[in-house]
Amino acid sequence: MANISTIGVVGAGQMGSGIAQLAAVNGVDVWLYDTYSEALIKAQKSISNNIQRLLSKGHISQETSVDAVKRLRCSSRLEDLHSVDLVVEAIVESEQVKKSLFANLDKIVKSSAILASNTSSISITRLASATSRPGQVIGMHFMNPPPIMKLVEIIRGADTSEDTYCATKCLAERFGKTVICSQDYSGFIVNRILMPMINEAFHTLYTGVATKEDIDTGMKLGTNHPMGPLELADFIGLDVCLSIMKVLQVGLGDDKYAPCPLLVQYVDAGRLGKKRGVGVYDYPDAVVKTGGSPRL
Image (cartoon, rainbow, N blue to C red; front, side, top):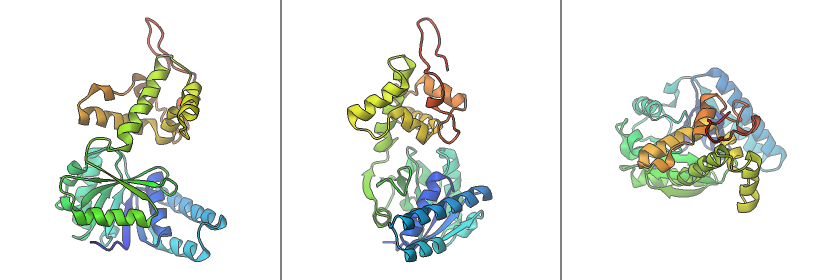
């Protein structure tokens, strides 16, 4: 089984920087890669601030905080990941883009390295087909935000080896996470259940059953969810929710996963949620009126 002492993280957004922080705090050397130097500067500052916050709250020692900062290196050269033991990609949820990245990484990283995807819905088997090492490709789906959420969902592709699975599971547990394992079906476990619920919340708003506030309050107080589904969609990103629903619809071949028209319209209008500062809660309710069309 591979001994993972250095990892690469591709993508310096919220997910990637959170994964990099987890690794550094837990004694793993990290190369954080992004094509945009501005994203790396922002991520490095955020990680440093988060580590200081952990120190001030007594969650980590001074020694650990200093060590974690030293373990993080940033780069805009993918070639700098050549010696890592495992790469986690945390980029846009696009099969084509991820396949292209994996094909490039396959040529750069050492032959023993594991290629892990943080995808929340895309087939690991198809991603692995872009490489010469399908046995060393696996899904490692962190929840958002990675330093706080306790779960990691591991997905084995058709050819993922037992050694790859065990090494990835051990790394997740080293990060203090609880691991669940899914077969390689669209949406895996969490999003197979979560995204249809969010989509149905949009249908409930779309058809005028209730206001967004009452929908979210109902789910928070009626089912003990910490966030309502519409609030959660704003947090995740409406474009991400839409992308996953499309993957579910195509991958599972069932129109019950068809995205709600209101969700589609919000994304078309650029109302993507917290990351854009404009989402479900920034506009009056959109409802379907008899004989008319929904209004945004």
